[in-house]
Length: 615
Image (cartoon, rainbow, N blue to C red; front, side, top):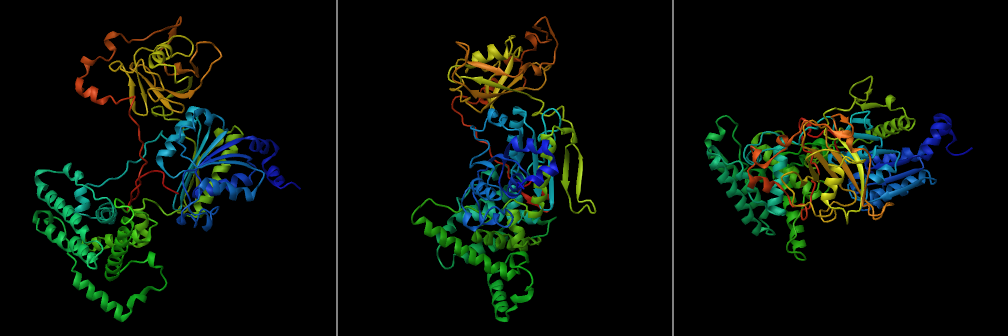
């Protein structure tokens, strides 16, 4: 009996054939990704491409079962492929160790797949894959997990909500003065230990630029004191390597700086004042505890998951400062400019942040956290649960079966919520697209173009303003790429530059927004570089219908619009931007590099500040 005959019997020959022939793109090979890849190869999928940029870390091994100790520091994508082939060697798996945002993964590449499955761990990549699937009109199965919670949904252009249809919570930030002077919750102390003190002692010391933004008459004294503290820490670094260095740092941050804060009496009229820590008193307490061997009070709890005493935090602080100092000085022998960077999997760094944040919490009367909790909060992660990932991966495949059978209307958004017993798995019908969504309501078309020859002027005249087939037939519009303004009615400097000169190359997205308010959302042109075309003297071809964005009626081929010369945006009509401000707003399209920063998730006692969380 063939190995997968039972799968064909359960799914039916028609469904099984579709599964065998479909091309799957899987993005991410982490907690959910490992489970998902195993499910795919065991369910009869035979053509899979996998993309993941990360390498395997020790902390991955407790849940990402395709990886073992000997795989540490190797590519997740490549090792996942090798391990999955042991389950089913007859599957064709192509693994890419790359960023899914790389230009090689353009819209045409996405179009080559029948379905895309996300197993990602960050907001920025999810948004990108969502946009690419909409542009390529390929169904996407989105997923995420957070501890014991999980979610799976299906995104299909024009039929269901996309990832951007509902707003995501904004990242929580904290004022510098709150972190440095008046912490009130554990995360304040952890952020101070990780982002401020660790950097000042072992990383690249930061200037107090953030303080300048918070200067006001009522806190001028506080700002001056904080600047003095920073300068003193920079001076203290000169003592690094000496036997007394940990003691000097302790007395500086937990005694002298706190004494200075207490001199600002107005600050403590409505707050509980901090209590400085006395080095000699805690040292005596530690010695007494060691002499009585009282540390065995909690034998049944792992050290990382129990609260440390004041003496334990004191001991770990001194020891971690010494360890980190020794490491830094040794590395400086070969590289004088080297600095240490916090890593949640660095034992020395995590010990330092745990002990330091707990000592500061003790000073301000705040709840102290275990090392396990500090790792989760300082590392911007929620500890993943292997079982949740397995459930989510199974739900992804079940939704994929419906998609491949053309039953989008039967797909659902499914939630894993164990606390809702006796029904830990909940589901609801897919929501319709949000008509005001700035992403899925755009018109997506592919522009096949010789980027070396076509100029911006030709694009404006023959595509944006043209009434011919493939033209948008609109008046004035703005053109952007990657957040850069390339062209609008007041900015025409780039008209004679080619796409290549403007760094509009294969894989880039060009956004065209009509100035006329009567239009729908913008048109997004996915750039696909092509050297030669069938027709002579042809350098571009529009694959799609950009006129879908036009809301007005067409009569006898002419565009009917209420726009007139008076409705066009003129420089003198701008009420906010002066000419100098407007020019400053224009960014050099020829020279600028666009850098996208990944979203950072800060954990607080109230939970994650992002909707989708790292798995």
